[in-house]
Length: 231
Ligand SMILES: C[S@@+](CC[C@H](N)C(=O)[O-])C[C@H]1O[C@@H](n2cnc3c(N)ncnc32)[C@H](O)[C@@H]1O
Image 1 (cartoon, rainbow, N blue to C red):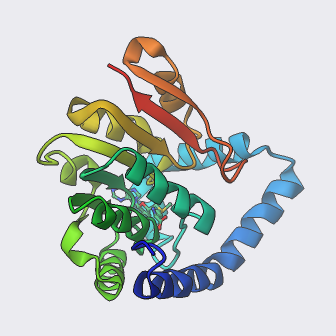
Image 2: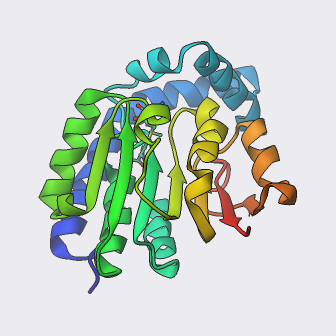
């Protein structure tokens, strides 16, 4: 038995995945239908999202205030395992939403003997729900969910970072990576969920920038990028 599969955490995650599916189903179906009708690839669809975010990402995510946009159970389990594998003690998360990914990562911190997860979320309602969900899961003591724009709230993460999950506005993947970069320890893992932004992918895939990186065959088509800090 580990923390992720403990009755308390598993029950919260099961409920949240159910709520997420119900809250996001209609939007996802509309999005997929529009994509099919236009014949756009996931990359082309992402390019449109990135363009609208570049205009005003706060407005874009205000429109998603009631949506989870969460990682899948398979990806969540992967997050948990990676955090165990790199013996993470300090994890940074860009884009907490209602806390589904956060719960997986905090469960790994608990099993690693403790640590701190610094999360970031623009939407105040989501911050409140994430905190409540973490409390219900018994993991609140490990997590500091910072409300506001990650470009401000993640400026000081307090020390060396073992793992970074990037899962917020697509247009900000590279700016957030660069913000945390000076704190990444050699061997730190950076996970870009829905990493479609070309500037981000060009950067992490160029060894001159001190990373090794490739796309990840978990939830294929969702643009999951796996990156290791090597310098
Ligand atoms: C894809 S969702 C995160 C899902 C979450 N990681 C999970 O798996 O449960 C992206 C979240 O990032 C938040 N976000 C977008 N831009 C942000 C920013 N600049 N600073 C902080 N949060 C941001 C959005 O409000 C949204 O809730």
